[in-house]
Length: 252
Image (cartoon, rainbow, N blue to C red):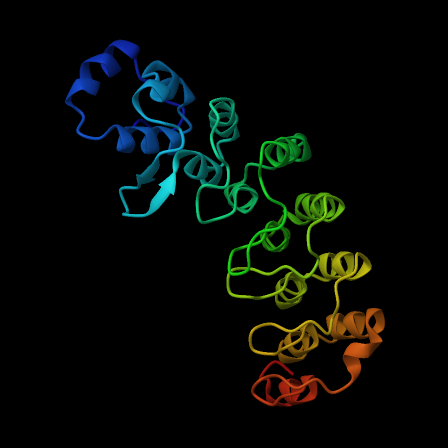
């Protein structure tokens, strides 16, 4: 690795070691993961490697440097790469989604950072089959201790035009994700902003199917009250209604 977190590498040592390194890509990736912006600046990375070059991680995954920085949660490096002209959406995983998952958008500056990434080319709505930023934000809100920050990001994304029915890479809608996690506050936020409890996932299941299968009566009532049309029998691809899900569930 480039260095441990919080440890400095002397420039003189770097200058001695660099000529013997077989891969500048690996040096860059390890420095990014360590949050070592000083190393990247010292080796003058843009002079050695285009910021938009596709790189392969030590694990064999093809990606871009800025995508690696977003996934690593190192916003200072992301910002530096944006200044160098990095294409935020050159990697398969959407930039904003990667940043949310990586933890780039936390704390007091969360929305300011998110807005900067959006204005720099990060997409709020992404192609089907990818993890949408809204779905990523719901997943973040589902994490213990992150509800408030996650919902703040959700609000920002919706205000910025995010598709309320967007999904994760497996085709699971945002409302389903909140429901599956038992996250009533985020589910209510999505419903109030236009999410439909009648929307189905790839298996033809609605959020009510999910709540029923989980034995979550409180969320089931919330969904039904906010979207009464979802109470009519809606059959999944397996031929089950939400009642069938409840009857077959070990949690009910």
